[in-house]
Length: 357
Ligand SMILES: NC(=O)c1ccc[n+]([C@@H]2O[C@H](COP(=O)([O-])OP(=O)(O)OC[C@H]3O[C@@H](n4cnc5c(N)ncnc54)[C@H](O)[C@@H]3O)[C@@H](O)[C@H]2O)c1
Ligand SMILES: O[C@H]1[C@H](O)[C@@H](O)[C@H](O)[C@@H](O)[C@H]1O
Figure 1 (cartoon, rainbow, N blue to C red):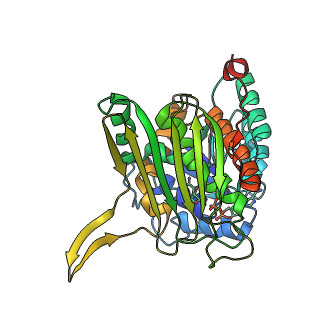
Figure 2 (tube, protein in one colour):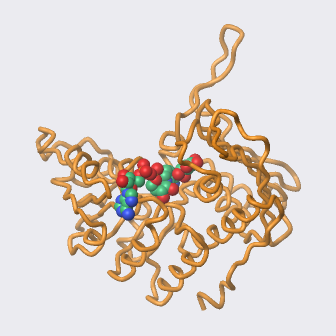
Figure 3 (spheres, protein in one colour):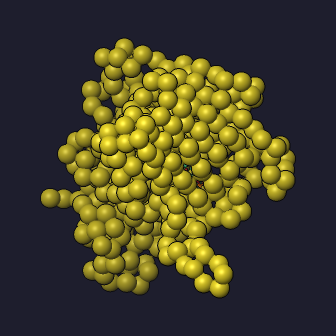
């Protein structure tokens, strides 16, 4: 069978990471093209991933996935041309969130399956338009990059909760800390770009929609300044009466830390307690912390992309759908209102059965 020919739009931190993944680790896929608003960045990555320009024989395979090492990776100046290109079967969108809507509509127009990094779009209205446009096509082309669903620890937690062994799940306590964020990462982005992961996790683990969100803003860290409200503490209320809380702190200074504790009727389960070897020595105990999401969630991204490739070849998706992206956008939109008022805000979600028939 021929490899799925993948093009990537946006090759900053996440796009470059996905590019390496497709080239080195993903079976049945080949990276054929990249595009970025910064053409130099795209050129540099394409050069690095095209073995001949790196002085390697084309036959050299350093990946564990199985497909051939990329022959050459083409740089396409305009992302719209990459999406339309005949030699691109499927697209990974890793451009910033503000660029997603236009690029998603182009993918739908050209019938291209797309793995779109979160957030789906910047607001609920545009996200709903994406869901409706995809629905009109009659097939699911969009998968959203909520990669935690593919993380083995989260997957094991989901399986445990679904088994019913602990009884009904009542509460989720989440912690989401980044070592640091750019000064341009404003308070709104903490909701839309970071908290959106817990929004998806809560919807997924409970299998219920979030109906109300309250975002509290404790006295901010003095290490950011300039009015950025970091950390934030949010409470989600779900349709079945369950609740989830999350602390999001994107300038934690220490390292990357993501934890989730589920409290059920007959027990609780926690994931994300430690990574690496836990040592006890010299009156100290502890382990290491990953510096960022690429390390903590490497396996999740690998599984996500491999399953997306396999499903795309079958003409399907295998993960969070456009609806999931829309539902998360609707919660974040209510979260942004709560961020500015400090009050609980009801989530305005379209009726799924009316939208999707
Ligand atoms: N799932 C995850 O854990 C995860 C982690 C990091 C980032 N992300 C998501 O990935 C996306 C990219 O984030 P990042 O951290 O890599 O950002 P980044 O700033 O490092 O990279 C974005 C890249 O897109 C380019 N770009 C800007 N506008 C563009 C446009 N209109 N078309 C094409 N390229 C454009 C920029 O030049 C840059 O190279 C965001 O949606 C972000 O939320 C997801
Ligand atoms: O875009 C990133 C990414 O989604 C990470 O997984 C999250 O931890 C960060 O807070 C966010 O900025």
